[in-house]
Image 1: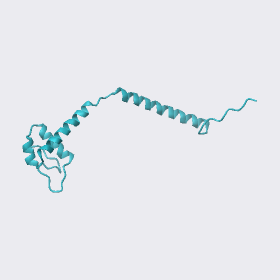
Image 2: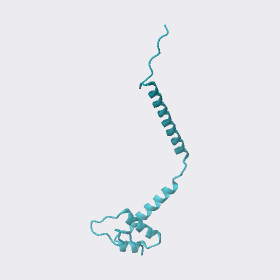
Image 3: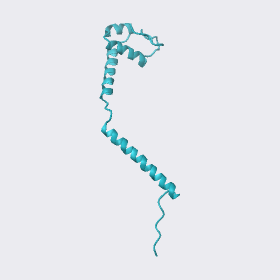
Image 4: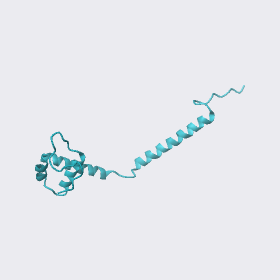
Length: 112
């Protein structure tokens, strides 16, 4: 059948063992390659509905990843704004360091 990864079996789980992401991925890949869900269900001791759920979730996850757009204009605008905020913060800190005192500037003296 498929290649076994170290620590990953292809048969049913031993009592107390859990389905890891890697094992589930291998099962879903076998389904996507055309293996019968009924045969996998018998081989692995997993209900058909559960195997179908794993496959459907995987396909939904693939769809979500493919929907993501790179270069989203809103994200670019947000990134530019965050960069500008960082620049202004740095300028503000440099001005306070130059005046020697944190806080507001001293009040103006009266001209009398």
